[in-house]
Image (tube, rainbow, N blue to C red):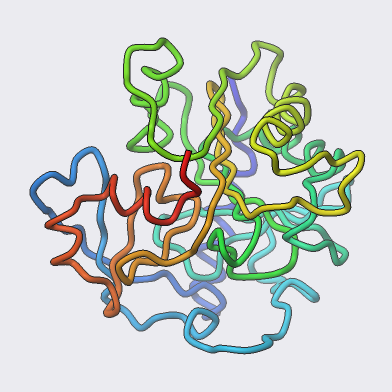
Length: 275
C-alpha cells in the first residue's frame, strides 16, 4: 500500500500556493460530442497561459523553480513541484534541479527519481520529448497525474490493457506498447524505455547523443507506451502525451466541427508518425 506522502504534501502546497497566487488552475468545462467516447474533451474557459501564447525564446521557469510550488527536493537531483497551470488538481512535474534538455534521453538518474515518487504515489506518468510532441518547456520534466491503486489511470487505459491481451485492434500509427514487470515501482522502466526506443528507431542512448525523432511516453503501474510524433497540432488542437491517454483540450483555435466529422482517433492519427 502506498503512503501517498507526496500526494498529501501536494494538496497542502496547492492550498498555500493558490492563496499566494503562485498556482493558477485553468478553468475548463467538459464537452460532449457524438462518437467522442472513451475520450474526455474539455474546453478552456479561462485565458490561455502566457507561455502557450508567446512565440520565440522564453525564460526557463525551472531555473530557478517557483518555490511556492515545490512539493519535495529529492536526493537524486530532482524537484517534485506542482504544475503552475493545472487542469486537474495536484498535477505534478518532476524536474531536474540543474539544466537538462527535454529533447535529450531520459537518464538513469531520472528513472531513479521516478521510482522514488512511484513507490509513494502512483498514477499516470507522461513525457513530451520535444515541442513537436507537445513539450511547452525545454528543461527536462516528466509529469504525473496521481491516481489511487485500482483507479483507472486514464480514459484509454482499458483499451491499452485489451491490446496487451490481444483483445483489441492495434492503432494505425507508429507506437510500442508493453506490459510492466511485477518488480515493484519502477526498476523495469529504464530497460523498457531503451528497448522500445530502439524498436521505434528513436535511436540508442548508448550511441546517439539525442533521440532521432520526437515522441510521447506514457506509463502507469501496468503498461508502458511510446508514440512517435510527426507534428504537434491537428485541426487546431494542441496534442501532447495526454492526447494518447484520451484527454483532449479545446481552445479558441480548435476546430470542433472537424472533430465532430472525423473523430478523436483521426486527430491522433494526424499528429503521430504513420505505422
